[in-house]
Image 1 (cartoon, rainbow, N blue to C red):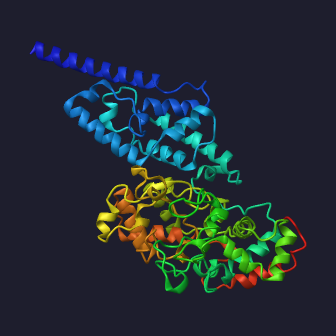
Image 2 (spheres, rainbow, N blue to C red; image 1 turned 135 degrees about the vertical axis):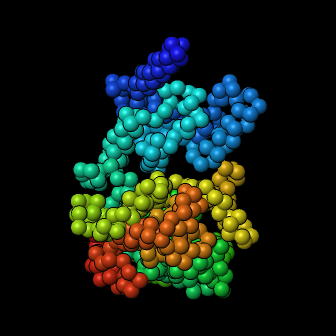
Length: 478
């Protein structure tokens, strides 16, 4: 009996000792307050072993050479790097540059959830566990980062939100805008004078045409769903596959695309437009070189920079109007964040900041059950890097209630369907009907105003634009 009591006492003492030692180790691994915020975050990511899985060339531990452990580690690294490459974030922290807001949101989310590092990692690496103290350090860093990065005036508890209000673009040349508006609606940019930019990106239909695939000249059809032109200025690249770096680069694509406007070259377009003496004079007034590919696409780009839709209900809430959203809409936003939607759909456009894999948690294309197309390859079309296969520029969610059908392949007709399936394939989450309706209610609050009028499918924005700007040709800048 005495031996048993002794053994129990000894076990209790040893248990307490282990707990105290673990707490001590964890205390030691919380980065010093003397470090800069970026250095503290970098230290936490290093301690957590993030670079061990979420990079193309990780440093492997010694036990990675063991038969069973090696296979598990190889699988974790493959899946981790496929999901997320942390290298750009680590480089930004070490170099003192601004990281991508999606990187910030992703790290903030997994640390807040304590879902990373996984137990099988921190059981082998003492001190790597995510603690409340570490999560608080990252949350404070993310909040301060967003305040500096966006400079959009959010204050109080909403200053740290991953979704930001729209601020209209400044330094607009209104002469170029007016010319770009006309070119955007000019069917002469198509070889048979039937298709304009507005044919696929109607300003009175949410900046899209509400077709699965858009019609080109002679009944030809594209192979990808047309994204909205509204708020495209906030995208880091253009097109689903990111092949255009700027709005001007994007504007140069459709006129010489055989499935869209079908010219052989811009020389043919320039020759046709040069037959219009009034148009020639307008170009020469603004551009000394006259009508060129660069001046055509620059004017369209300048016009598209004005296609922002601020003052949505959600923007009003972000700026402090607590009555702007209903209880259901607020629940939807919280679910949007809870299910990691706000790690990719961030910023003023709720997207357009990175390329992400379509089918992160479940295989979207296998489930779709139709033959793959060239467009389904996404970013891989441009890079030929296997990691980029099925990776697409994340679409913005502004005015989403007007921009059906959804996804790059236009296969989802309703927001309810799109939300349910996105949660399934990207997050492995099966939402119930109530959750879906709450998230959809939130998404409807993202519809904003164009030229001071709430965006709908019934407004004639061409008339509004001309009414506002007919007298602006004499002014260079606003």
